[in-house]
Amino acid sequence: MQPTILITGVGKRIGLYLANDFIARGYHVIGTFRSHYASIDTLSEAGADLYCCDFNQADEVDTFIDAIASKYRQLDAIIHNASQWLPDNSPLAASDVMEQMMRVHVTAPYQINLGLEKLLTTGERLTDIIHLTDYVATKGSKKHIAYAASKAALENMTLSFATKLAPKVKVNSIAPALICFNDHDDEDYKQQALAKSLLEREAGEIEVLNAVNYLLGSHYVTGRSLALDGGRHLK
Ligand SMILES: NC(=O)C1=CN([C@@H]2O[C@H](COP(=O)(O)OP(=O)(O)OC[C@H]3O[C@@H](n4cnc5c(N)ncnc54)[C@H](OP(=O)(O)O)[C@@H]3O)[C@@H](O)[C@H]2O)C=CC1
Ligand SMILES: Nc1nc2c(c(=O)[nH]1)N=C([C@H](O)[C@@H](O)CO)CN2
Image (cartoon, rainbow, N blue to C red):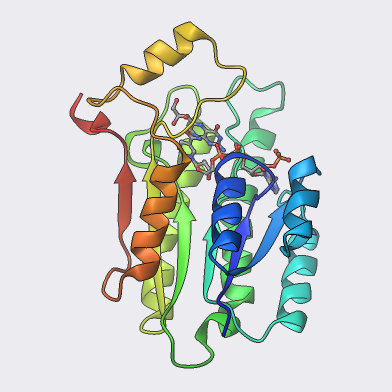
């Protein structure tokens, strides 16, 4: 039976990288996207089942959950990757920054995990939920306070869902630091960011894929957070 994996935020970067690799390995990929990039058409042509869904809109998330629950009987894994790295100096009001961070990183994963629980617990196989969090969930961030707080809440949900869904579902976090720069990052920023870890490098999307594959292959890891941070905690 072809394994089925749901990945949120597949339009670009890490989510797109994961979706492409899982398709190449014969998985059936369900994906959510917000902006419609050319990558969305390419993924669809490759067989992915894609849904446009803005996690800032709770009703859109409910509609997405209903669509999956009516179309699929079972899921092997859910990867909560969708995220916005909103700085506190955003033009948005402070309350809107915090609300948006909590909606995309906490409310939507909460809605999806509860709404699709039955699809993860049918049959005998061990299934997975993976939350993409962030090194700053445990360290804080003076420029991304709301973002870091929401990622800390997502880390806490890993503990709760691991307890609630055992023994049928493993629930873990992956907490990256510098995986991939953004196109708008200038050289000064890049040098500053690289210098924050012992290994002083940009890990690349493959680092997250390797961590995802390790967790999916495990039969004994749950309620844990895998740090992918180049030794930043020791610098
Ligand atoms: N890149 C890195 O170095 C690091 C990444 N991480 C985490 O890894 C994960 C992947 O990172 P990365 O690939 O850089 O992520 P990106 O910032 O590139 O965005 C991921 C995807 O999430 C989507 N998204 C954003 N807001 C919403 C929303 N409100 N509703 C639905 N989808 C939304 C984006 O859609 P759109 O294109 O429309 O904005 C995008 O396709 C994230 O959880 C991130 O926090 C953690 C530490 C470091
Ligand atoms: N949703 C996102 N979250 C994060 C991003 C990003 O681009 N999108 N980038 C980072 C940084 O790489 C940071 O880890 C190092 O400066 C953090 N989170």
